[in-house]
Image 1 (tube, rainbow, N blue to C red):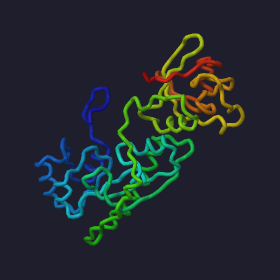
Image 2 (cartoon, rainbow, N blue to C red):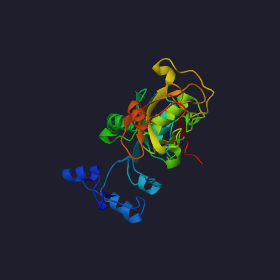
Image 3 (cartoon, rainbow, N blue to C red):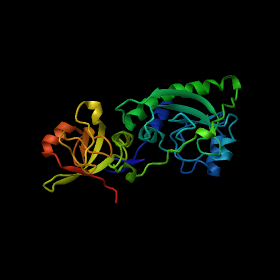
Length: 287
């Protein structure tokens, strides 16, 4: 991909390692193009493994491998099928998630399951951190799935329970806009689920008219931090006497924040640097 100031086309880390190991690499614009399928067939492979690949694998390519294709997905299927399972699991307040390897079929993320591993979601864990943990966990999940294909076997897998399915759609920049007219728990989950991308964003507006756009990085319900968590009659988004953010229920304590033009910092550092005071407020960026 093009990267850096000069937008030079560079190899991905996966391609760089494959080149180092002497493995064949086939960069493609369309994985289902006839010439690409024919090229892949010529490699005489038994099984295809898909991880974080943005194109749909068509039936013709799937059927060209004796073992078909399997995919590593970052959720406990059938929950959170789709492009952003890690983010939406956190946003929806899930306590556990994991990795699933399943057989690719025509319908998105709906094929029979071959292997699954679970993990707890940390109390203050953001989507980027969970992504990295699941990438490590997924190695074990893939190994367990591939072991089932040893000695020429082609496992069928276990069908998914369609009654339990949910969807995790691709994120848009606007999905990160924070709304404060919700419970503190929902706002906190949203912040953690949208970090680092698209970012949990809002606008800080001081009583004296100063303002800047910010991204919340980490937060918690004020009740989790001790006294000062009672509900307020103030408009949601307003800072109360403890400099906690008023929500539709209890107030919310910011732990880490990033100004649009600065680095990630603690809430205490932001308060001191911006002279934050009671009655200042955060405003949603939504139209």
